[in-house]
Amino acid sequence: METRVIPVDREHLHRDMLAEAAQLLRDGELVAFPTETVYGLGGDALDPDASRRIYAAKGRPSDNPLIVHIADTGALRVLAEEIPPEAWELAERFWPGPMTMILRKKAIVPDATTGGLPTVAVRMPSDPVAAMLIRESGVFIAAPSANASGRPSPTCAEHVYEDLNGRIPMILDGGSVPIGLESTIVDLTGEIPMVLRPGFITIEQLREVLPTVEYDPAVIKKVKDETIVAKAPGMRYRHYAPKGELTIFEGDLAAVVARVQAEAEAKAAEGYRVAVLASDETKDLYRGLTVRSVGDREEESTVAAHLFETLREFDRMGAEYIYGECFPEEGVGQAVMNRLMKAAGYRIVKI
Ligand code: TXA
Ligand code: MG
Image (cartoon, rainbow, N blue to C red; front, side, top):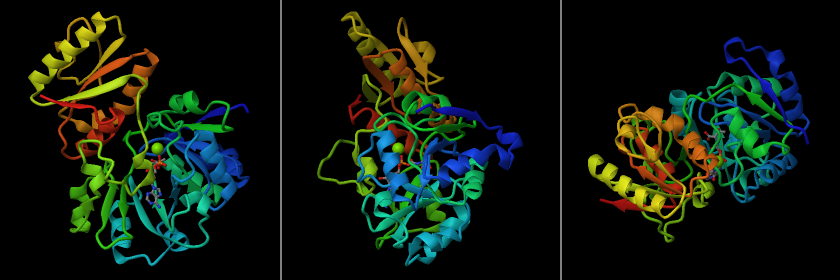
């Protein structure tokens, strides 16, 4: 299958630009498209065959459920039942935007989309291309991140092409996404609302609406602990990982830089291809090593925006060992460190 990449000018967006993509979706085909978080691989959420195509294209285990994307809040009533008042409050405050809610599903949502779960994940994206695509197609769009399973999520159309070329008919290219990490997931089906995946919307922001919201224990674990089972099935799998072995060093920044320099030098001396994951503040402190800055420590949203792209770059350069700094876990830093720890397979060295 030939994969067509269609540029879409988000500044001058017109529905005609999305007509073909919308038709593909109505026909049960797949289209990759930008959202404000990461690129999604979309298919008709109510068509089990479309969902199966999504799993096949990504090489994703079919028990890992998909997020259903909607263009207006009212669609919640079509997809979910027993919707608690908290859901409407969250929607009012954070939609459209990078927040996904887990609710009890209605029968109309096929098991193929929810991985057989009795619940459904719903999100209303703010990206204008995503919103217009949902409206134009007239379908709810099931969309996981548009990467091959296990690889870092795509933050631009080139990443999608890299992973899915030949496996899907169309990629809408809206340029680089603004956020760069996947949405915050909140589970509203239990007694206490739970964050299953941290994202750009922080738990502090959620607490302004839902004071009782807590992290699922699987989110805050710092070590690989097989006894804590993640409620979001996707958070269980090896994920976001570069091909090389990534180790993260935690502690006082000057000590971290010294240790990363020493470890990286030693591995390079053994003849391995080695890279350093640094920040704007530290990148010039390393000597004689291949160094990539992931962003500015003072502006952690820049780290979020470039993390996945940097991990992909390490693959492109064939890095066998990657040594990385850790980042403060405040605000979006919680989500950054969550992804970084997973990418490292929880290989953390405390200094
Ligand atoms: O920002 C995002 O959320 C992006 C864009 C494309 O919207 N999508 C995304 O989808 O990250 P995906 O499939 O890569 O991640 C969805 C996560 C997985 O960890 C999955 O297990 C979880 O959401 N999930 C989906 N439905 C669920 C459910 N009913 N219960 C618990 N977790 C669920
Ligand atoms: Mg994903």
